[in-house]
Image (cartoon, rainbow, N blue to C red; front, side, top):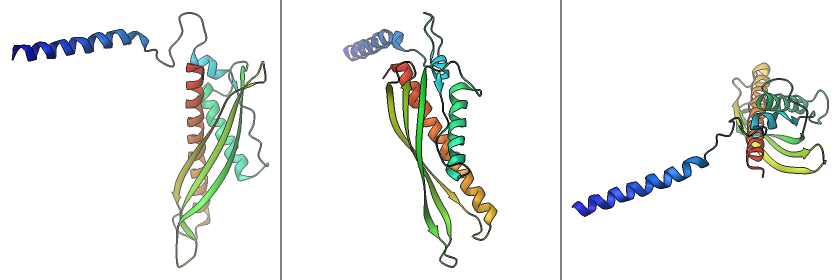
Length: 183
């Protein structure tokens, strides 16, 4: 009985010792650096976001502006950042899929809206690509009343905005991990 308690105490002591050794390895991602090197916030503010190339006055152009605005807010918190050190080029394609079709009218009552985005982070000084990636978003939406044109358009627009926000969040997370880890 006593030896079992000693073994349990020894195991707990070993776990505590291992935890104490690794405690110094943790560094919050958005913490300020005390050695004078730029923190993650400053690195993200150095990312330039050129406009996304889409045909003017198209639905995709509006979604492109929404993705760019969401990214700017997530990266900078304001409309502009610092002098650019990197440029982020984004391309995307959208898709719509009908999930449920009303048999009486032949119109969809539920659809999926999808965005597939490719992004490329380019270092401004060298013009070299330092990171590339892809991300996607799929959001569903319902259209109340198959003959209500405004509600259909508003449902599509809300789905586009949600998908654009999700794309921006995915890209921001990937950029943060790149600038923190360097890979």
